Length: 407
Image 1 (tube, helix red, strand yellow):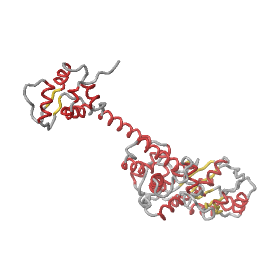
Image 2 (cartoon, helix red, strand yellow; image 1 turned 90 degrees about the vertical axis):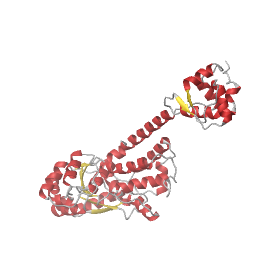
Image 3 (tube, rainbow, N blue to C red; image 1 turned 135 degrees about the horizontal axis):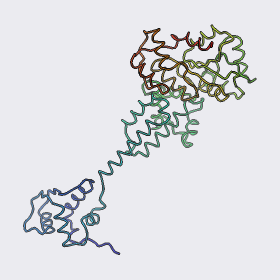
Image 4 (cartoon, rainbow, N blue to C red; image 1 turned 90 degrees about the horizontal axis):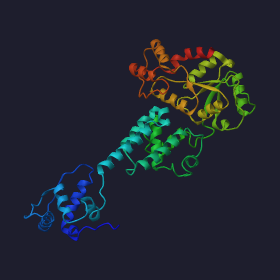
């Protein structure tokens, strides 16, 4: 069946402004009963009067009731108003529906980002997701934005890296594209901003600052200068790593292990299977003073863990060790703890709200907690620290930690 064509007089140039205005209004997606036209010139007014069967010319800005228009059209054409508009102007749109759909797509995108496992594990990154939301969509496309964010989250979940060069690291994670994290790319800028948020520093502005941030995250780390402190390790293996740590333990000393040494493959299991992690070297020094060669297995991150620290902890966990982490009760300490627990299988060690309140009752004076982000393992700790606003540094609870190790 052939679709009928509008009568020639309906498609004449003088009526096109009328059809265009009606088309625009109906494409809004909202109910339309009447349309204000104009300004119309004399020829257009005559054409409209002829179309409607009026005996006089309308003014230059007439208001046209659609029911009257449809009735007039029914007398001269078998086509409906919608069919006429489609033939002359093009298909009608639904801008309201399109806006609603786009709003839903954006809302779903930001909800997905805020609830992503990487964000959930490290709530400090919620400030980064808020920035992403403020920046808006890439090229007004939720699909392209989600793809970029997915790549950024993939990179973040793989950090700290194990000292890979940046191109090799990028190729491994981003669809084989060794240039995906080159300086100035959207993905590099987005990822570095997330790292700056995580480390609570300003976004890098210079190439030197960007390189330093990548290095801090373990990308292209020097295998010799990147080290981690360990004490009390008595591994079951016989390789160089096992010999170094065992000799130091027997002498009552800590060992500074390089990333290069940790990369040497060997059996590195622990007979007792428990490793306690501290944020500050002072705790390890006090433990060695108290326990000497009987010191329990300890690893110190010395603040934010570098790639050597994460590598060692993962190596120990792979061999069956249970990891227990303690750090400062302040904003940065909470972010470091969340980071360690996300990147390894570590569990909190005396890091609950009750531990904080007990320590605070003994040491009520302390520095400010700084910027506090949610505590993933104990929401009550967030509440307690927010209420009191006082930090409890790890050194002030050293005796309780050592007593726990002694047990």
